Length: 183
Ligand SMILES: Cc1cc2nc3c(=O)[nH]c(=O)nc-3n(C[C@H](O)[C@H](O)[C@H](O)COP(=O)(O)OP(=O)(O)OC[C@H]3O[C@@H](n4cnc5c(N)ncnc54)[C@H](O)[C@@H]3O)c2cc1C
Image: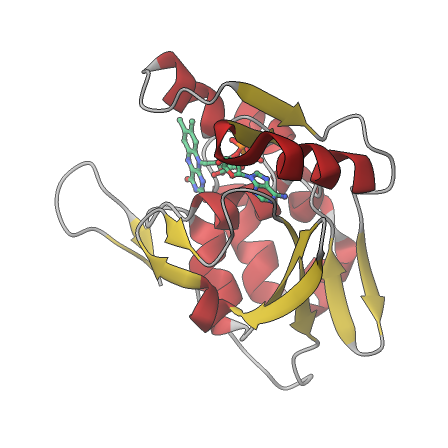
């Protein structure tokens, strides 16, 4: 990961991290984005993890929607995450797409943003020069806009384990035909 962050630092705003590619590739196809370089993190070992440590759930940059869908840890303790995962798009997108990529992309119709906001999650932003942690509520600036530095950051996140009596309901709201936002 250090090498990838070094590359991001070197290449600057002309580079984009490629995770699952399920949002970025469509943008490239439509020419809504045209970065000169893609830094593909898929070959980096140890980025695909979900673990509880020190009372926090830690989600790696390559932890994919399909793994969330199948996680017994999420089903048993983090119900709102377990509820969200199988609702995302279709199996092909769930097989590739990542939670980190989803929040980095910050599409208002994406599900993980609302879920992490509800869980009062923290996001760990890493760059070549170090890392910092921001609350999800401070991470999202608006649609497709976050506190991530375009030049050099990657992200993982921490969610505090919810109390055992904690209950959640995930609802989707449609403002107009063809759109869907989660809350
Ligand atoms: C047809 C379709 C339907 C969809 N339906 C849903 C849905 O119902 N619900 C839902 O939540 N999502 C949906 N998605 C989006 C999907 O969940 C994507 O997987 C997700 O938004 C992006 O994750 P990714 O890993 O594919 O990221 P990528 O496409 O690889 O990257 C997306 C952006 O995030 C950046 N990025 C990725 N990883 C990192 C990282 N670790 N650190 C910093 N920046 C990073 C990339 O540079 C890029 O700018 C849909 C997508 C499609 C194409």
